[in-house]
Figure 1 (cartoon, rainbow, N blue to C red):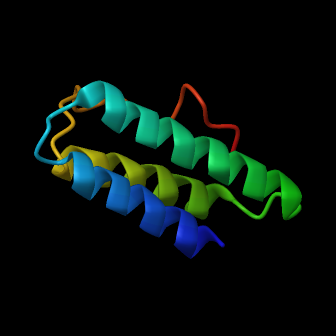
Figure 2 (cartoon, rainbow, N blue to C red; figure 1 turned 90 degrees about the vertical axis):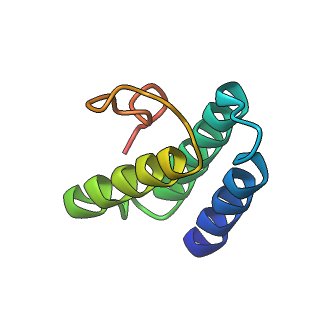
Length: 83
């Protein structure tokens, strides 16, 4: 389930990579974070400290590689993240 969510996120970023559309990239970030919020709640809060850091880092790095321009120390998942 989480693999499928991450695959969808990566495919969205790949599709947006050439557009430099930061609004749509942030929407993809929001969607993956909200999706993991729901999975985490449904699966008895399986996202723990290490997973939290790794997942947020993965989402951030993938978005940056796709061309999202944000401040270096900005956590792009924080606004929606419940895990």
